[in-house]
Amino acid sequence: MSNWEVFLSPYKQAVEELKVKLKGLREQYQRSSQHTPIEFVTARVKPITSILDKAKRKNMSLDRLEEMQDIAGVRIVCQFVTDIDTIVALVHARKDFKVIEERDYIKEKKESGYRSYHMVVNYSVHTIEGQKDVMVEIQVRTMAMNFWATIEHSLNYKYSGEIPEDIKRRLQRAAEAAFQLDEEMSKIQGEVREAQQILSQQRGST
Ligand code: 0O2
Image 1 (cartoon, protein in one colour):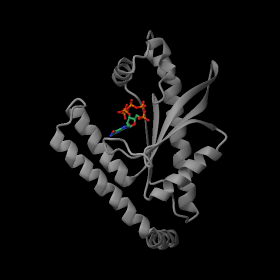
Image 2 (spheres, protein in one colour):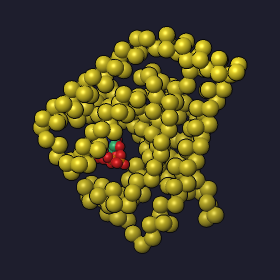
Image 3 (cartoon, rainbow, N blue to C red):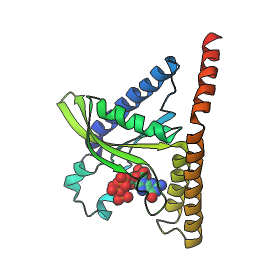
Image 4 (cartoon, helix red, strand yellow):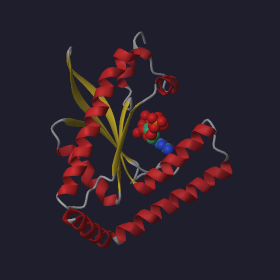
C-alpha cells in the first residue's frame, strides 16, 4: 500500500457522515418522546496494523483491500433486543445505504458466545475526485451484548486469541448471563419504556 492516508480517507469520511446521521436519528426519537432504539453510536476506521493482520489471516492480497468489509465500522448499541429489529428495518429502508450482506449472530451465536447483528452496507461518499462507494460494517447489539463483547475483545487481545480454557468457560457462562439479562429486560420493556417516557416529559417541561 503506497499511501494509507489517501486509501483510508473515504472510509474516514463515511464513518464521520454515518455517525452524524445516526446520532441525528437518535435526537429525533428523543425530541418526539418516543422510545429511542439507539442508546449510543460509536464508529472507527480500522487501524492499519489490524488491517494488515486481518489481510494476512485471510490471505488477502494488499491490492484487494477494498474487499475487506470492516475497514469502516459503526456500532449501534440498543437497550432491548427488539430495538435491534427496529434498527435493521431502518437501515434497510434508507436510500443512502445499500445492504449487501447480513450476519445474524443473535439467532446463531458464535462459538465464543458472541452475539450481535452485522450488516455490511455500500455507502457513497462525495469527494473532490467524484463519488466513491465504500463498504461499512454496521454492528447492532444490546448493551448486555456490548458489555460481553468489549470484555471478550480485551481478553482476546491480551492472550493473542488464545484465551485459557478456564477463562473461556467463564466467558461462556457470562454470555449466557448476558442473554438472560436481555430476556428479563425484554419482559419488562413496556414498564421501562413508560418510565422513560415520563422522565423525558418531565425534563421537557422544566
Ligand atoms: P475490531 O475492529 O477490533 O473490532 P473475522 O474477522 O474473520 O472474525 P469476518 O467474517 O470478517 O470475521 O466478519 P464478522 O465476524 O462479521 O465481523 C468481525 C468483527 O465482529 C470483529 O472485528 C469484532 O468487532 C466482531 N466480532 C466477531 N466475532 C467476535 C467475537 O467472538 N468476539 C468479539 N468480542 N467480537 C467479535 P475485529 O476484526 O475483531 O476487529
